Length: 415
Image 1 (cartoon, rainbow, N blue to C red):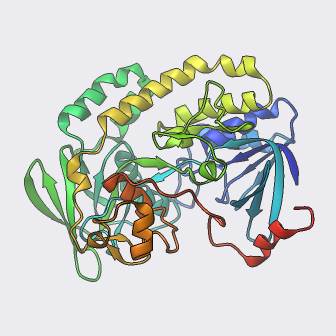
Image 2 (tube, helix red, strand yellow; image 1 turned 45 degrees about the horizontal axis):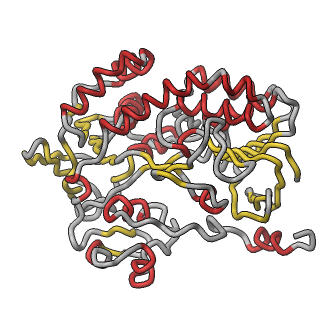
Image 3 (tube, rainbow, N blue to C red; image 1 turned 135 degrees about the vertical axis):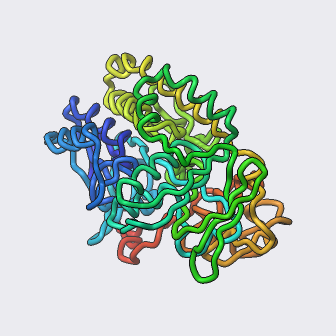
């Protein structure tokens, strides 16, 4: 399979990139491991309520004859120069491209604390995705903790589906939250959005200390400004911000800077012909993702004038992202929640004490098997980087569990 432009990720950035590139009549493919376009932020499901802008972008994609959507498809490996090995539910194959746009999004940062592996404890974004997918939460007592606007969005989704929201615990101090709110009038849409999501249960300068229960979650212990509270609940959702998905960018040897893909004014990475946009370049929300994706799409097909016209809009949303990062930076308190017996790597049952003395990620893996389980270090690797500053090793293929038949594509005569 050969295309002019391949886009990995069909969230807001990927959708915008595909539509921008489509005007050139280039042959475009956009792939995502979800069954529908929209990514995580516009995730579909039986209990999802897609915003109008998401529905509009989805409809526009369907109207473009030169855009092929590869849904339920994931990248397994780099197959050679300008080629990737892909797999869906039925087959594996190699796709070749002239230009590649990485819109791989982000995932939640999950930090270990006592009890975080109990049934009933999820990520904040994870809970939102589960509810959109059909999880019943009606009448369940819920506490949401962590940092950033995702807490409010997750809380709103849960409340809309009948959850009994008891507390939103934001780890940032009130001064930081107030400073963030004071700057929101610069982005009126975000101001109205925040006002609509705000809940009376919101408390700043608060963080989770421990999830309580034996066989499943029964309650949570919260530190609120130095005062410990215990709240009985059936669900706890914790998210400490978002981190870019860099696996493919690292495998392609793109330069990474401040845990994000480094790009120039055209959203081009350090590797010729490879662009990046959206959360892969740093968290900033759907508005930033849309404009970065459009710039990358135009630039990939040589429509530089159209891309340059969007630079002021991009700068506006990148400024919002910068304020967001500054005001919701993690405090030392949430980095020091784990006890010696607290699991850091859930896949291999590796506790904090087994890792605390390691000199780096490589030694930790060799001595404890940390990061060698099913998730291949996606959860514990990010946690270790936040806790100790370790830099995870570049990924090795296959990037996820893969069928043998797919891997054999790498040994075909053409390769």
